[in-house]
Image (cartoon, rainbow over all chains, first blue to last red):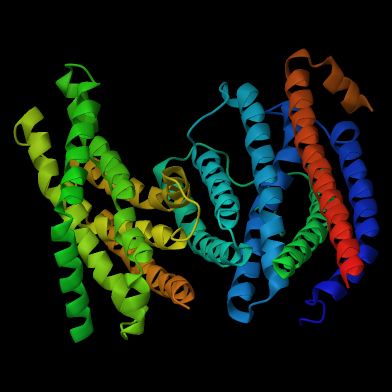
Length: 237
Length: 221
Length: 57
């Protein structure tokens, strides 16, 4: 299971995989953009603005997926004390925060023509905003320590507490206020949207996921270098 | 069990010695809620509509601003490590601190809140619900705040960091605590909200104990 | 293609769609660029340290 958990082995693997991830991300996003602009019909209710969905919904999925992978990495790092898990969860946080920001901004732009306002305190928007706060807290906490190992451990604890609390927050905010449309893709068996719209959505989601992996590999590389530098500095001291 | 009593005794003595800070906390609560109420102008109907929300939000801030004294001073003068060496477990230390925090920070506020409301509207009609909801929610608020404080013990910290880390986890408690009074206003008994608040306590207690123990063990290595 | 022309002809919604895609493009490409710059910087610094260490031993 931990065959590639050695940073050096992982580095070799990631050097091999990185160009492929870039390539796949490029191709899939290109296909997704083609479908979303040229080959999908306008919605009969929302008109052309439905095209915002093809960037909004995949980045919302990604923001949650990145958080859950961060949480899993934090659990691994607390139980097995793997440095690589710490590195991954630390590199995930800024990417997840950016995708959450993309979700919020595109959502508010989508909300202007459909709901008539830029912002409403509706359940999904609010829980997405709280997710952004949790990401920011994670980033700040992991950088608040002089010794990065303590920062890693405390940030891992925060990530796990967030992972446990996120469904609760989601549920409570749902209870508080609901105005949003129901999820656009609840089950794969019977999606409530047409397959013509499903194509660009899936392609964009896959493309953005590959993009996320490529950014993640890049950041992990930087993080490993940073840790080596810290080790050098400690040796010199 | 004996250890726990000894620790609580110690914390109580310390807090009584530092009674000034507990007083400051109460003072902060009173002043800021008065300012909040005054900012609504003289429309008392509007204030009575939102008064429980004001009490709740001021309570959250005064909790956040006053938890840091408990772990910080103990860490700085080294008594946290000393207690560990003397054989007290981290869980006992955390529980003793939690109980003292609740007694010296949350309990005075719960007692004073109805008095502040009384000064504005006479007897506030939903006093009972408000007090029960504060009573049930304040332990979990304190648990979360102290978890955040433990996480930040050795960091280069400021107040905003603690707020940013804790506030997302306060939101569910705030929602259900405030809506308890709203439900009571509609004429129902908000026992569902109370059960949910107790449930939050059941979730946050093991979280704080497990992760707080992890952190404090690491600090005292 | 007709869908695209339909989008271009829709005066009200076109600006929202363009705005959303532009902003997300800038945010994501900014993230990519920042990560690349960061990695390059650390790589350079690491090389410097490695050379220094070899010089010492």
